[in-house]
Length: 448
Ligand code: SF4
Ligand code: SF4
Image (cartoon, rainbow, N blue to C red):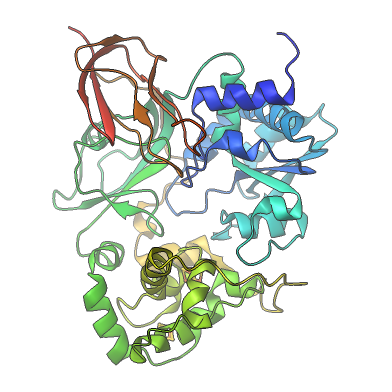
């Protein structure tokens, strides 16, 4: 292969349409334009029941390490760190084998806590550096990339765009599994791969139980950011919390929040030293104030991890997380920017002691019964139809580059990033015919 310059790598990653595969969806080529000293591979996958990154790291450790080396080359980073749960001994062994001849790449073993995958926490755990309020990893010299995104960088330099991804299907299904499927595979097909729901009324969550969202249309297709589907009873705490309307929740909060502080005590960003006090923000609901006070603008500091609503609060269905999301939306609509920029010198003294174990999260959510230490990997699965979302990334929606009736081959560009905008390209994930084109998705069907 010809020698690649940092610019070549950035361009190939842009062409391939790589976005943060861990759920964030931030275009990877933009991250790689930075100059930093460290690339951190995020393999923490802290959402309970998901095993996609774990399976990938075990089976494709060399691709991840190769992607790490390319990312280091693009950003001039001198060191690479792969953050992985220490108790995944077989995964750690596979990664150790892949880095045994690499002097500048090491493995950092994380504790099994939630949300170890929040990049602010992963960066602190792996490097000891604290990202300032409202900051980014690059402000402390780090680029964080999900392990799948790194493996995709390796494929990108060989000319292979993002057309597939690894997904876990867990919860109320007959055969939980991990599979690799084309981007845009309909949710209902994935449920079928797991041999159907074991509770017909159960709801499907895209992502994990803590941060994922209930899927409203099972005919829609999975995105580049879909790491897993978790199927849970409609009466479960998780589904009820996600389905309660904001109005109902605010009403409940005004009458039930007893200002016990537990949400603040366990808030991971507060523990990191950021000035985020969810109990105090709950109090603002009583003021009906038009003024953007600090407990309202601190919405910009919330990671939406859900520890406050699902783990800390003993009252059902109170959610500082949802209040923060609503405040943030309102502030952005008013054109108000994040005014917080504290740079904590050190984390709070309770940081280590108040980490919430994943076992405790599963118990609190009532989902321990779905946990499987070894969830089978079915390999690559095909499909005859895909509905590829072209707007599930951070930045401008992509522009369709194909028309209905057009034939496409797998890997052909079907939607492009608008010129000079932050965004991503999209490619056909199967060969076939374009059957529908909208602003938000493109449907392809295999020809008979
Ligand atoms: S939201 Fe819940 S945990 Fe937080 S202060 Fe109110 S009652 Fe306590
Ligand atoms: S969701 Fe709750 S616990 Fe998580 S960062 Fe926001 S306020 Fe803190």
